[in-house]
Length: 268
Image (cartoon, rainbow, N blue to C red; front, side):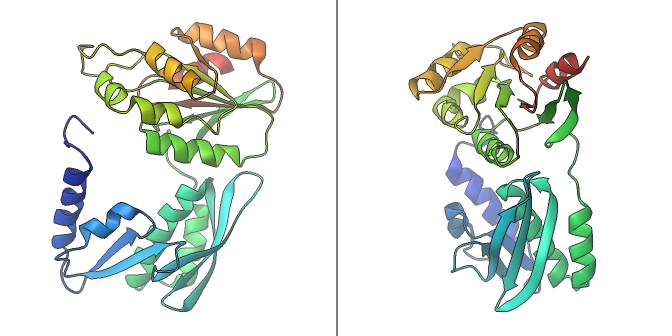
């Protein structure tokens, strides 16, 4: 939320402030593969558990593979002890990282390992997080709340691993502030999608005093060598998809605004 935080340094300071609240007999469980986390560990009294795929973490994510649905299967080695294999029923590497943090939190809270293993496999996500909405003539329609470049990259990368034909991304930028501040990062986020459609910016609480539009994002995406279409009207987007999508295509609507309505129009 760049209308609140001035930048990454203030964000890191906020996480460090949170970490300092933990008692000495507590645990601070973090993604050690994220370079930013090394700057939030000073003056932490709690035991720090760093997890990830890099060898310098004390909880290692190992033997990662994905099913045809894009679901992750992996092992965790914690301080030299093999905790065994885990499976998650949500797609993408980012969800393996999320699950690992949850697994470790449960493990250090003395929850039985087999209870953890069983229940993490039962988690199937929340609404608007890679939520399957239905099928239109063998075209799968999925919706996701992602509205920040990092989220977009992670979700699109996850979708890329799913067995399918063409992969469509329909994105509604969220707020003029975020679009203006992160325009270049947004443009770089769509490399995993085969076809990209951008609709108008969802203003939320803002007025467009920033001189930015979705056409600017389409232009930036084009500069990076990927074609993107600007289609502002949801009915027009649904009609375009119905006229151009092929069986076994994947349609992913993305954004924190009203873009979920596009999927409903495709399915109706």
